Length: 143
Image (tube, rainbow, N blue to C red):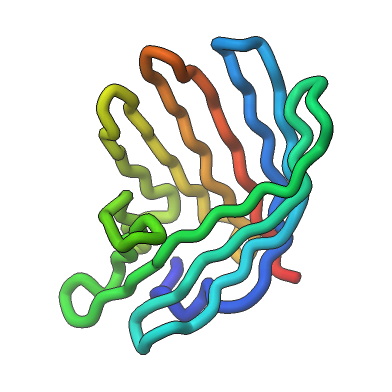
């Protein structure tokens, strides 16, 4: 079982598959995800990779999030925020396969993490809304 935020610090190999059901397109990303310490209980998450989406030319894709740990009774949780600090979702590390939801009207996001093969892990997103219907599987492996 994961003990906390510190176990994510460092660089990870990232591979992602995006299955867009609405447009019947598949995307693939290959790159890196880096967790960098920015405060005692905070990591900056930054990913960059080469994305190929359907028949479109490949492009560089990037994302940034803030991962915040807790002390005391909530030490087994990580709050993930968007780059601007607004809340996104929570990861319950006391479960080997935690999940959470995020409502961003009109879209709904559900994430399922799988830490059972740690230090390899994955995050699976299911996103639905008026113009979205996709499943995104991101796999992480220590570099």
